[in-house]
Amino acid sequence: MRFFDYFFLVLKQFNARKLRTLLTMLAIGVGVGAMFLLISFVLGLQDLVMHRVAPVETLSTADISPGKLSYINDTAVAEIKIIPNVGDVVPIVILSGQGSIDDKKTFADIAINATLPRFITYDGIKIKEGKNYAEGTNEAVITLAGNRLFLPNASIIGSEVYLRKLLVANSNATEPEIAEIPQKIKIVGIVDDDESPAIYMDLSKIKEIAPAVNNSSIKISINDVENMTEVKDKILAMGYEANTVYDMVEETSKLFNYIQATFALFGLIGLFVATIGMFNTMTISLLERTRDIGFMRAFGASKSNVRNIFLTEAALIGFGGGLFGTSIGLIVASLINKLLAVLADKVGSEGFNIFIFHWWMIVVTIVFSLILGIVTGLYPSRRAAKISALEAIRYE
Amino acid sequence: MSERKHEIVLEAKELVKQYTSVSESQALKNVSVQVRAGEFVMLFGPSGCGKSTLLNILYGLEPPTSGTVTLRGKNIFKMTDKELDIVHQHKIGYVFQQFSFLRNLNVIDNVCMPRMFIGSSFSSRRKRAIEILKTLHLDEYATRYPQELSGGQQQRIALARGIINNPWILFFDEPTGNLDKKTGDRVMNMIKEMNRQSHKTVVMVTHNPKYLDYAHRVVHMEDGKVTHETTNHKLMFLTPAKD
Image (cartoon, rainbow over all chains, first blue to last red; front, side):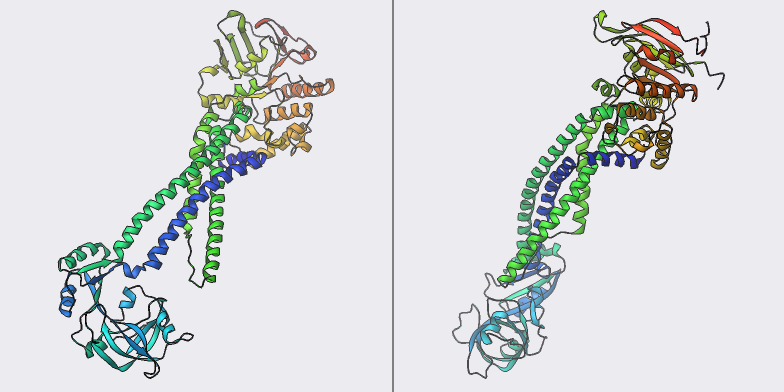
């Protein structure tokens, strides 16, 4: 018997039992589609945390704060720099002060983060408008909240800010360490922070005026995420505190594994029910066709011919279920993503996709469903192969 | 071929078929039958005499309790599954009593079915089926479903299916059983033609005495036993060689 003829016979059978075939495929499709949705939902959640809450650039960085020691001076910066596997070391001085863009007529309280421009990247801060400031210049970037503080309805880019009464954050000093920054700083970019009004400017400008000011914290980058723990331990041994996004993400990943496992379990239950349904349908179909099978055997069909006819039928039901499943999954996921985008747009926030799917998922889902079909068909097809021609004739 | 013409193609020796251990329930009691190449043999007897059981055993569908069936010298109950499949594919064509069609398939696909199992391609088997349906004047029904057709038409379609693989021997189980006189005559004439013109060996089971003179030889059965055999001298097929 030719390969094509198995499909020929099975398609004729499907044609004779259209509704039943469709419903069986749909049942498998709903099960498979649910699995597909669950996986793409978990991928969506993961993406949300990994890329929005914690951008990739931040994963290989650590924040070092004074901890038990009360300050981090430049000697400490040099000491940390020579720890193996430490890439970049970026100190930051956090100050609070007053700023004015209208020639000292009005002032607003604002935080001043004096650091190197690459801190913006390491911290995962997004530049919304304009560009990052350049090292060694009097350029600066401001948060969205800072922009609104000075100019509620317009972009502040291009404005020059005068800063005075700068006080190191968390210090006990009552008098400002820096009375003023004589040279005005020029805003060249706006970063995506809607909550705290702050300016990011070049560290050298502060150090020129107050060379003795201590660093509030240090951000370091690590050559390979693998070495994170080792580096972190060394820094802790030096008496500082170290926090990493990586630790948090690792914790979250563990949580995701649990969520994924729970979801997979629910999906499997659905799939199991669908498979039982398919098994039942195939068994009924087998009983109904005892006579047909008997006649096929009487006309020279071999046992393996009969078995293969049923296996082909099971495989095609599985394949059809896979097609239904991916279609259901894709449609539902797209609809919910669209709906979320519309809702996000209404509240003025940036939308995100809660369901993420890759093309390989479609292929894997269909192949999985096909295999599921074949496995489900194993027993009915073996039973079918055992039917003898005599049973058909006794039927009469 | 001519030397082989009258050789014994199918032989049943001392067949006993018992369904339970009670001896009264013996369906066949020591039945021996020989069928020669080109011969038209009828197994004749009242219903329940065991003739259909005999035909099923000759076809290898059910094993006898004792005795042997040989096809050209080979015991069919000692064949492997594959060898028996080949017997059913190429050597014996069985034309069942009605309702032996696959309902999902139309007439031509039903006729093609045995050819599908021997691996013939879709187009070649269809071509052959059309040829056969044409000779039986059934080509106009090719795309209809068998269950939509009359009993006589179904019987002829079953005949077409029986001969599509060009077997040595044709088995018929009550081919006129449910047919009216005119249709029955037509079907019987077709079978006779297969035997006379195409030299097909025919073994037919019937309880209808009307068509006995179509056969070269009639095996009379009663109560699971062969009572006697009659040879139709008018047809002069052959006189069995005396051993």
